[in-house]
Length: 297
Image (tube, rainbow, N blue to C red; front, side, top):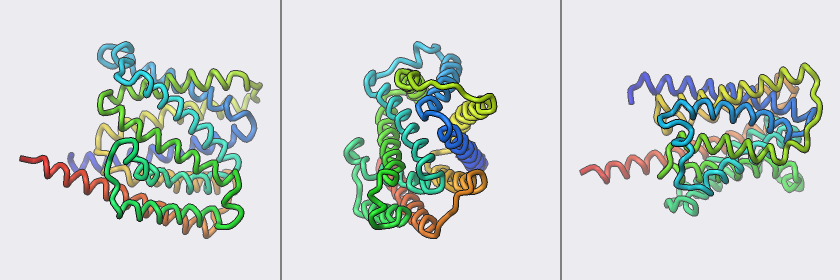
């Protein structure tokens, strides 16, 4: 992996998270006016079309891409992700972008916490300490006291938990299925699931909001395409820390487009969560390097 590839991967990761932040802002606007299920459903129709287009170009076509060694787990992943998106968009409406994304930033810590159960990975005491510190950061964001137990505060945390489980299951199925197969089932299973429940929430949209919906669909497909490119040019361990810029860009959209404010407790708590998350990523990279060295003859 060359230094040039790493730099390109970092630039693409930053661009990816900028696009996802714009997508979050559009989602918040539309979900504030229309049913969340309908908004996510239309977005997924476009996403499914994008997935089919990409998959059809792979060797062997759609039949080869759809072939999986995990016929139950792969569709479940797709349903889990679309459910997580619905929960997160709801959080945007209830709490705003700033607080929702600050709490969601804890998902790498949840991945570390659950990796022992799902992937049978060893989680050392240092990572457990980082996980505990990260959740102290979440409590600071949500202001310790009675408010922390409000349903609104739980929504983005639930989303982060669902996304962490989705990420772990993706790593699990990747042991036997290709990335193209996982991508296929993510889009198709998600589109089918959200259509089954979202079609009953259909409501008419104003012409200007159809333009916003078009922007949501395009940004969603563009974001996923950019993410694919990121991991094509650079190793995940080199670019993953820059995914936290999603929080920075999302907060900027929340402040500039929706007039949200960034409270001191959110800044402090988010900094703690991000620092803890970066530590877990560093520890994971260290363990991988040690494992690679041990396997070297």
